[in-house]
Length: 343
Ligand code: NAD
Ligand code: 89V
Image 1 (tube, rainbow, N blue to C red):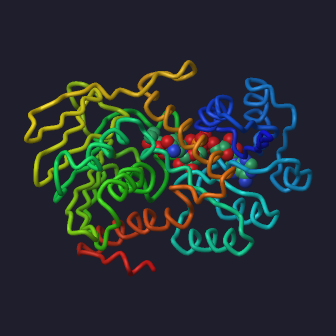
Image 2: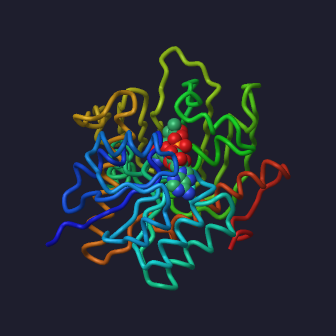
């Protein structure tokens, strides 16, 4: 099968991971890059040996010569770039969060559906190997029928130095990080029907909320808690680990710091090291996220080749984004919000 050719738009902080992931991917390679900032364009082009370089996405699409586009810009530009890709009939990956509003997100999904091009949101946290190891335990039935869960991300890591825009937005932790944890909750416990959330800003130097606690009611009757914080000073910094607690009718599962997966069931208690691989280009503590970038990008290639809908398609991701919107509405109104309000 011919190798798929990709173009990447947005050569910033995170795109470097995506470029490494594409270099490792089987069946795809990046042939063109675009960034409106010439310095960033040059840095990524030189590092990865890409000679086709554009400062305008319109010029990139006009020249064409690629089978898919990977949009790695920040959220404000997502809708216009995805619509541009749809207009050009190009299968598209878009970084999370899909959009600033549900209205934009739905318009993007509709634009791609109207012309029949696949859209995948780069929602990579569910692709982290420790999370997948936990999912495999749940699916094996070892802990019985799940009735309660917790997805937790608590840290005091300085995310603002690498991603300064995170300190300036009205919305912060739910939109940027909680979105991953909410997606993991859907992945493990099924779709949610209502949301009760509380938020708070602890760091006075940022604009948005840096602490959020969300209670979710899931369709199958599971209750879960998603909690995230960038104001939590722990004896051992946990960034960027997502920790899990899952209770079932026959046992329990705990994914704790340092990637320890403990499964307690009638057969006894087993603790396993489920640390992610350290890819040659990765650097701890980011290697967990970096590995998931490679995995989700390979998933995209495999889906594109077989005509399968990606697990985190735009259509699927509307259900995760609705939880983000519902969390903000719930926190603002101090009441429980049905997720159906967003559909
Ligand atoms: P960044 O600001 O460092 O990089 C964005 C780049 O896009 C910049 O170089 C900017 O010049 C370029 N750009 C913006 N609009 C453009 C346009 N219309 N045309 C061409 N270039 C344009 O941001 P970042 O930290 O790399 O984040 C990018 C995206 O990745 C965000 O959506 C963020 O939420 C997401 N992200 C995801 C993860 C993850 O684990 N999935 C981690 C970090 C960031
Ligand atoms: O995933 C993200 O978007 C990142 C980080 C993991 C640092 O929060 O902003």
